[in-house]
Amino acid sequence: MKKRLAMVLAGLMAIGVVGCGVNSAPAAPEAAPKEEAKTEAPADGAQENAEAEDAGDAANLDELIEAAKAEGELVVYGSCEEEYLAAACEHFQELYGVKVTYQRLSTGEVQSKIEEENGNPSGDVWFGGTTDPYNVAAGEGLLEAYEAQNASHLISDTYRDKDGYWYGIYKGILGFMVNMDELQRMNIDKPEDWKDLLKPEYKGLIWLSNYNTAGTAKLVINTMIQKYGHDEGIKYLVDLDKNIEVYTKSGSGPSKNVGTGECVVGIGFLHDGITQIVDNGYGNIGLIIPSTGTSFEVGATAIFKGCKHPNAAKLWIEYALSPECVELAAENGSYQFLVLDNAKQPEVAAQFGLDPENVMKYDFDDAKENTPKYIEEVMNALGSAADDRFQTE
Image 1 (cartoon, rainbow, N blue to C red):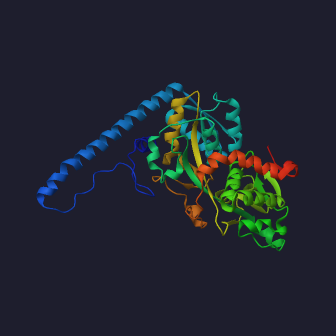
Image 2 (cartoon, rainbow, N blue to C red; image 1 turned 45 degrees about the vertical axis):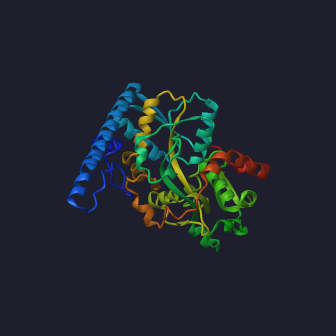
Image 3 (tube, rainbow, N blue to C red; image 1 turned 180 degrees about the vertical axis):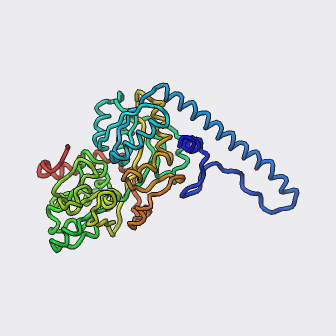
């Protein structure tokens, strides 16, 4: 395992969903012998340069590992599910002998915590959860930019902050999870699209997460505004509120109550529904991708500015962008699509018919600039009527 990770972190693994890695010079086209001779030396030189660069990366990584070991500790705030968080932290500690302390918090809770600490964070890194709160924290100067070697394995620049404030590790599709037994019992059709959720028959049946504490709910706000326009998007959320029974603290909260029937229609990430079906045996859950389109989350990782263990934090980022880390997700009940070209996708996600490319174009820049304002506008539009349904514990 250690050998494999070292190879990944040095940039030596080159096979995955999309080919990437060390590039040798392209083969010379067919030509006269003299022309072929001219291309051989540059090709060899390019290969030597690539090998020298890899050797330099490996040396830099070795230095980073030693510096992280000297610090001896790492504090991780995780906004993915706790089983995956625990497995990732324990494996990092096993690989490097760096003591890891971790705590599971929603993205909104992490954002609030580091805002309160204002440049003197008690944590070193953030792991998992949607990027909207990450972007807010970056805009407030609370994240540390770092140019990660393993970012070369991201399948697209969509899955990283252009300045290196965060990097994507997975992708999740936003949709509906429904209890098919309860819908049948009540003789109600399953919702096929966003506007179906406004129908009166769904009153008191829908659960969503808290706009103030959950990155999932922040994504819902941005999705509706981008889908319908600013005013109509906020109006949609006000109308939707009339049918919502509970706003859970965490984005995965609705999914955990669909199988039991306490929640009949949950809005959230469909991989959370897969977890309930596959790992918890709730075969009565149906997964629905809204027919007119939906958006997606990028689950991310980042370093807190002013953290106490900066070298261990940088090593964490390299580790988080490796198969050693991200493939632990599916082994621990998290079935998001992975965004690294050298990582194995969770087969179960595809078996449920989910397509990671079947999503709307999401405006990350607008979300980065306006999410706090949009949350305030939605909460003001809802007024006090929603207060007692917003869970914070």
